[in-house]
Image (cartoon, rainbow, N blue to C red; front, side, top):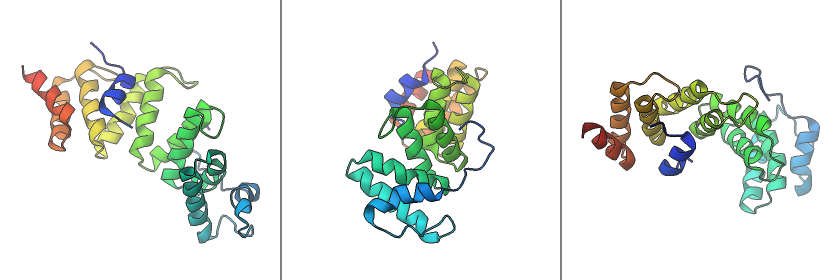
Amino acid sequence: MKLLLSTLILLLSVLVENPALPAAPPSPEDITACISSDKLSTNLNDSDPILLNTAKELGERYYDERKFGKAVKCLIVSAKLDDPKSQFTLGAFFYRGIGVPIDVERAKHWLLESAKNNDTNAMAILAHMYEKGSSADGVDLEKSFYWIKNGAELGNVQMQAILGMYYETGNGVLEDKAQARMWYQKAAANGHKGAKLLLKRMHE
């Protein structure tokens, strides 16, 4: 029986278009929207090394204060400066409608940017989107498998266990029990209790 990734994410607690194009640098308007409320210098530009840290720090502070609308303004700046964590958080905000209206395509854009920077949390949400058909691309199990595999190969333990399930059930890939067993073993060796149970079940 095939298991949906949405179910697996709940069980295992895993946590615009055209990704080939680089993100445009933040505009002066982006920068001003982020920092003007704190009366900081609006003369910072995208070549100033202080800007990234300033935007990140303000974004994190606004996030902690639950001022999500302000956080988004600063996340836009740091995301455009290619910060993977900001790209992931901004994508998650657009996907869930936190501080901004839900916009799945903009969510996917920033999650793809973050995933290109090897953020496995972004890969997990992308895999979920492709499995559920949340974006304009519709359901694409092969892309879902692709992102799960990338995250697993980068060492995300939960995604290693999920990859084993993909191979075991043939979800987006040809069924392969040997590969399933191997990925369950990797996840189990890294301390994933669920993978240990799945591995045990395969041997019964």
